[in-house]
Every structure is written in C-alpha cells, then in structure tokens.
Length: 173
Image 1 (tube, helix red, strand yellow):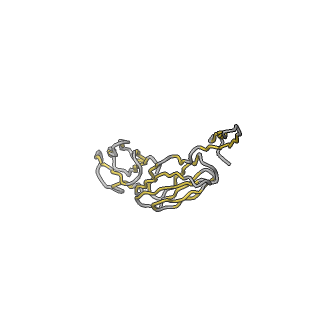
Image 2: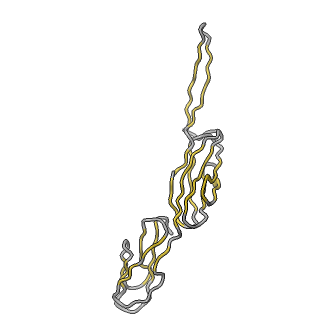
Image 3: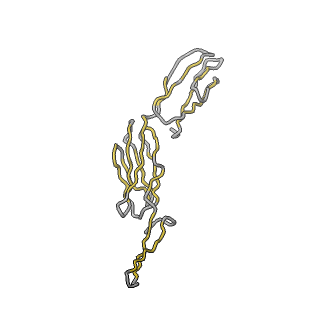
C-alpha cells in the first residue's frame, strides 16, 4: 500500500511495426523522506521523524552514531540519544529498498553556572550556560531581584534573601 496522495499513475504503450500495441501501467510513488531532515537536541532526549512518500512498510534504523531508533508508529521513527555530545544519522527504508536519512546533533545536557552563589544586596551576578540547545531564556523563580531574560545577568534585591534563577533552552529543558 502507499501513502494517500503520494502516488500517480502512468501508462506506457508499445506499438510494433504492424500496429499491435501493448500497455503497461506504472504506479509512481513520491520518494521516501524523513521530516525534519536535521534536528539538534540536548542530553538524553528523544525526537521523532515523520516518514512520507515511498511504499509502506517502513524500517527505521540507526545508520551511524550512537543512540537508538525505533518505529513508534507506521509512519514515525523515534530516535533516543545515548547522552553526551555527538551526532547520529537516522535512516528509513521503504518496502522497495529506497531510503532517506536525517541527521541528529546532540549537545551536552543543559547546565547553569554558577549553580550556587553567595553575594551581597544590590549586586549583579552573570550566569552562563553550557550545553543545551540555543537560544536560551533566563527567568527568576523567586527573590526580589531582577533578571535579564536574555543576558543571564541577575541583580540582587535590596534585602538579604534567597533567590532562584532558571535557564530554559529551546528544547524546553
């Protein structure tokens, strides 16, 4: 079977020198593909690729790199990273042996530095990020100070207290 809307038909006719004809009907399928064709994730994460085109049934596999690939449905390949930075190639093959690939880049797990800091009132502290997937967004969870959501600079409030800041990457981690 094929994916609805992904095929067309063509008729090829051969005629010999005395006028005899014979027809052959061809079913032309769209090439198998994965979407997206590349993605960046962080840490031990899972991401999905949608299969389209080609002729079902599909086989999902890890072509190179580390991690694991499974068919999470008839038209979805799911990749789970092994953790740590690196890259992998996910491959899907249709029932005719045609294949397509997608690239996964894995960044190290999101980390905020410093993770703890003692300072005085009305003082600025710059937080930095390692790992994760850009862009990053900083937020203030508690405390009376103020946080620059793009630069990671936190300015303490006018009184002694504890404050919590958070960084979130574009993958939501």
